[in-house]
Image (cartoon, rainbow over the protein chains, first blue to last red):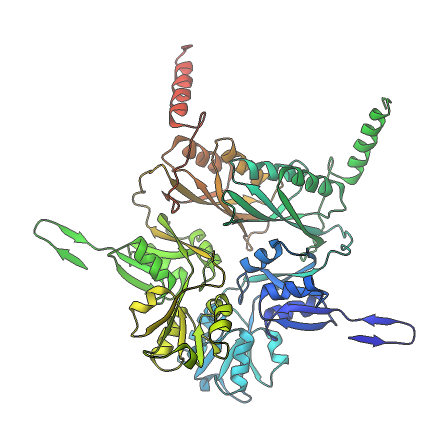
Length: 316
Length: 316
């Protein structure tokens, strides 16, 4: 979509997301790319594929602890032998559900309550307390349950809060969650044309392929430790087609434009058969990363100048 | 159940599993505990809880890449502040589906096909090729879809192969999978009364709690690397209630009865606020772990004897 003004042409980016409409992923996509055109895709690989093919500029997918989709699919898609994508931003969404019902319906009148099986499991205690006799009915997604309520198939749906804006249904309850600290993490992905600038509170994500030898991973992690870089997530995935190789997904504090991070990434590249850079982007938590001596940019500048002088035959 | 023989009383163990009946987890439970009494439980925490409370002797749960349940639930349950459980065995199950229909129904007559949303997603290409016009219908589990076919709610169900033995339905197709190498890993859990003996092809699992400091994880992994121990899986989970602490789930080659493994576990315990031992058990792959100098039991015996002699004032 293009909006034509007198002096400017503002292009609204198309943002693909793992759909359907009305799910937690839509909610994350709207928070990460406000004002975009949104394009729900049926699977995580298809949402990422929309950016790779140019169908969309941006894609929003869950990367950790999703209610509705297998997150291993996101990691496998990012690692696929396909045009690269990088994260521009991340979003942490507390998983609290809304309960939607047909207009006017009371809790006592609910005979059936529907949602994605994982969402139903996450509000089971609330259902027990509020409508113990309601039949639990599976839906293909939280939003699919809302569609079913609208069509009269079910009385109530367990949904993402954003679903309330798409359907003419009453909100019977909000902020429903048996487990209060369930959080899903989402990434906003784009083609690697330009990277977000460093903010001082950044995270970098990579996938590293290592051979399956004792000490290989420890050696890689030492490259981070020796540069004072804090890892915030690590996860291994076996590569089944190539026996003896493992893929590691790593998140760590810092931005590739910082010398200590660029230096660590270079060391990774020397150690690994394959390193996939998945972007440097602002941390959702927003807390600044403290960088102390000898890991600051100034320390690297000093050491670089010193070595260069030695190479010129000087002894500074 | 007790079977009374002339000379022996054989007690058949009760094996709880993440149900319902007819799922991939039941299939794994039957492979891991043949001849047991089986007890389906509605959630992963309840299946593990059955062993903790003594309701069952054994429990079978998915631990990696499950079709039907969030595997993070298994990790969180194992890490919970509750009576300990350990793994006695693991099982790798290739995820291939069967398609069940009402007796006599042909593929061309299928108007609706049901399963857990994740299972439907994993056979979408097969449905496109075989019955493109069939309505995809969500069920709470693969087995729930088979129940729906039996009751006339759906025409076809995408299920685990074991479901065919529970329902009077025809098997329209078997070995159906869009992605050929999807595998789910299951653990058989028990109270830690006795450990399986070392076989030479063993795996050990632990959960380690570390503070969130650069280099902490690298230091832990060095304890394995310096002892020639190969890590086969690593996964981090943040502890949201205690800021700055992370929990790591680690699998590695070897058995706690090997000196190098016992030595590494001791080093972990000195480094970590909390180490949960989840068992040493035979590897599903069955390939023997090669242990070379200086990491063999004989090397530890030699070094132990040598240090003991020094302590006695001898110089051997």
